[in-house]
Each structure stands twice: as C-alpha cells, then as structure tokens.
Length: 235
Ligand code: HEM
Image 1 (cartoon, rainbow, N blue to C red):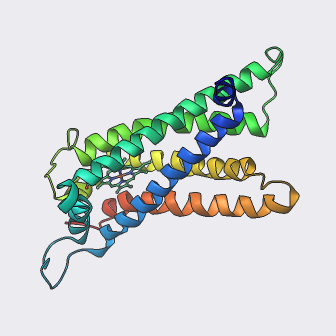
Image 2 (cartoon, helix red, strand yellow):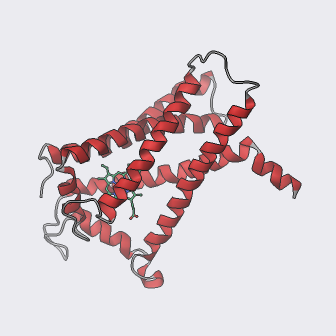
Image 3 (cartoon, helix red, strand yellow):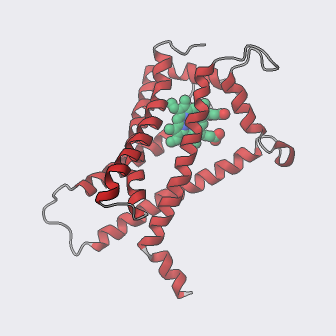
C-alpha cells in the first residue's frame, strides 16, 4: 500500500499523467483538424448525398459510429467522457507539478530572473487557461449552439460559416489557436524531454518536430475563420 502512495506522490507519476493525457488531447486535435478540412470540400455533386455538405455528412457519420450496438450518438458520448477526463487530469497534473516545483525551492527567490523554463511554464499556464475558456465557448457555440446567432442542429457547415462571419468571434478563434500553437510547441518539446530524448543530439530535431506540429495545427485551424471572413468559404 505504501508503495502505491509513494508512486502517487512522486513527480514522475504526475509527469506520466501529463504526458499520457497530453498525447490523448493531441490525438483529438489532429483528428479534429483533419475532419474540419471538409469545410473546404463543399457539397457532394452526385450519389446518395448529392447536394449535402461533406462536413455535415461527416459529422452525421461520427454520430452513427457504433450505432447498431450502442445506439445513435452514444459512441460520441464515450469519446466525450474520455476527452473530459483527459482534460481534467491534464489540468490536475499541471497544478500538482507546479506545487512540486514550488516546494522544491528552499525559499522564494529574492530576485526573479526570467529563465527560459519559467517563461515557458508561465506561457503554458496562461495558454492553458485561454484554451480552456475557448473549449467551453466553442462547445456552446458550435456543438450546443447556445451562444450562436443562427444555429441549426445538424447543419454543421452552415453553423461554422455563419459563426465565423462575425469578426469578433473569428478573432477569438484566431487568438485561441495562436495560444494552442504555443501550448503544443512547449508540450511536444517537454514530452521529448520527459522521454529522455534531449541533449545536444536531439534538441535540433525535437525543436523542428515541435514547431512543425504546432504550426500545421494552429495555422490550419486559423485558416477556417480567415477563409470565411475573406469569402473563400461561403454558404
Ligand atoms: C477553427 C477551428 C475549429 C473549427 C472550425 C471547429 C469546428 C467544430 C465543430 C463544427 C464542432 C461541432 C461538431 C458537431 O456538432 O458535429 C466542434 C466541436 C468540438 N471542437 Fe472544434 N473546431 C475548431 C477548433 C477546435 C480546437 C482548437 C479544439 C480544442 C482545443 C476543439 C475542440 C472541440 C470539442 C471538444 C468539440 C466538441 C465535440 C463534441 O462534443 O461533439 N475545436 N468543433
């Protein structure tokens, strides 16, 4: 029993929780951005879905996953619960690791000299808070429609285009996705560190990998509101 308590209390356990939940959320973000690319594909021109937006058919397809066994939309609920747990544990481990770091200091610093690591962890914390606010807003905006001016259930393409035609809304999406890019950059960089893939030999490569993933995800996400505001994507 004692050993379980010791594992639970260790910084290593919290780092593993952070890394595993971070990877789960990263996987979701990649899948989500890939699915959202259907925004650029417009409508089906023939076949059984002729005239329907590809994004709408894709979203309905997600609700249909596992339907014969679980029921319509139920697999999505399982994924939502998993995602929610991952977010909660990610925040919990971040908070716990902050406490561990603070306790590690013999006394509070007399003079604070900004260092790369403290700068990064501060960015992570604030970035994390912005992303959390964004996710709550985003679900109320495009999933439930509670804060959307003209939400129509099941009309995902319509909801996205109408939603992003408000520059304030688009501005917030752009800001949140910039924060997400920074968060992903630092997260991927730290993940390599936790895996022991650091040092002179790896630093250059892990920097490039972290920059590439962060840029691809955040710029692709930012391209959607920009495409609507510039009229490239329209109803
Ligand atoms: C501009 C970029 C984005 C667009 C266009 C977008 C689009 C959408 C849409 C249309 C939905 C509703 C889907 C449906 O009802 O079938 C949705 C749900 C969701 N999005 Fe995004 N999204 C974007 C960025 C993000 C980001 C960056 C995150 C996370 C950091 C995120 C997390 C979520 C979550 C958690 C849901 C709820 C899923 C559910 O419960 O069904 N999205 N998104």
